[in-house]
Amino acid sequence: MPKIEQKKNKDGFEKRKSLTAKAGILAIANASQHVIMLILAMILSRYLPVADYGSYQQLFMIYTILVTVVSLGLPASIHYFIAKADSKEEEKACITQTYIILLGMSLITSVLFFFLSGLVSKGFHNPELNGLIKIYIWFFFFLTPIQFINQLLVVLDKTKQLAIYRNVFAVLRLVSVAVPVLLKTNLTTIIISLVFFSFIQFVYTTVIIFKPYTDVKLCWSKSLLKTQTTYSIYIGLASILDIITKQLDQLIISFFFLSGTFAIYANGARELPFIALITSPVMAVLTPTFVRLYKEKKNKEILQIWHESARKIALILFPITAFLILFAKECMIILFSSKYAQSALIFQIYLLTTPLRIVTYGSIMMAMNKTKLIFRASIFALILDTILNLLFIQRFGIIGPAISTVLVLYFLAGYYLINIKNGLKIKYAQVMPWKKIFKLIVISILPLIIILPIKLLVMPTLVKFILGGIIYSIAFMMLILGLKEVTITEIKGNIRKVLF
Image: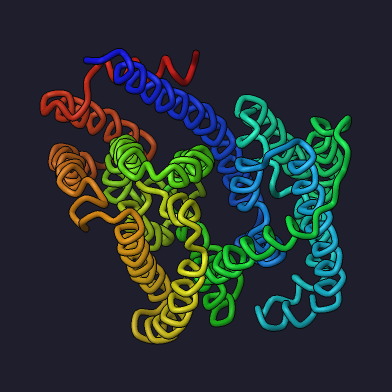
């Protein structure tokens, strides 16, 4: 092989190795952060009455929707514009205008929502929300302007700093809830404590955002502002429609049922926590990479990285999903207590979305600058989801909205894959490693036959869950190693890349 070709292959391998390491670092950070957030939910589920916990979940739902609406896709645009910036001055201009816009929008929204709190609480049939929203809106105000810190640190190649940052503030958030709980206070005091925490994070993060640019001259650019706004608007509108689509089932439940029923639904209406742990850092790392590769017309390399990422994510998510579908009830009881055993069926339905999550559709769509297509798909998905939610809640009751959400997410995934196929100019059979995915699904299901008898045994819930998990894990590892889906060398290599 010629030396030039060898050098290209080596460079390509080193790039993929670097991407794996960065994604791995963020995945570990996400894992510890999500564990902390899960502990927080477990504490509140056990400490608060079901109705109060439902109020807390409704506040968090409102916050999630408002942040997405106000952000208007600006955080996501950081990946694109910082990656292609020609100078530090251009980077600072982009960051500064993003921060100022988000700060202004959060202020306007906070004031507006302060006066609309009574209307919202009335619509949710929950009078307690009126006073709680007026306090919680400060939490929203402080955290919204700093939403792009994740994207900024990734694109600046500061993944380790981001990992430390996220975990430190996850611990602080846990402490801000745990202290009022230990003091046996009420929900209002817990919300006040969270607001104080958000103020600390706001101040510190603002310093982190601008510190690398203290010696850089600020040069405003109207053309950059216009370009970023144009690019972001479709991502933002699509994100708004997407989050409303994802939260629509919980909104419908809030309108049709009391906060206690909402709490049961909300605890079950969770995608596998490991999904966000893995896919978020993968997308954060891959998006700027795909932007560069697509600009250089290296479609084959994009596809190669995408397929490799899908296989690795599937190897983690598929077995966890299969096991939890069988042990969903035990999982809900262990996490949230027997008060939420009814959440298991909702959780099982949501787990059916896992096969969709092994790839990050947005990373390629944004790299191809297909933000208008994302927006159009989101409009149709929201309309379809609204219709199905209203029909299914009457036909199937509380599980109806969950079924609707899953069906709509499969529709969206199909639409994105078709557009990715067209954008990369490949056949549909090439867009995903279909045979590999199907094989991993089958391999993940087979060990369930072995552990099914354990499910039927009479023993403590935690013991049953742990015993089933250990036997399932051993059986699954034997299958993937025996069928050569993965090797010990590959496992060790990936661990080494992340740690070192």
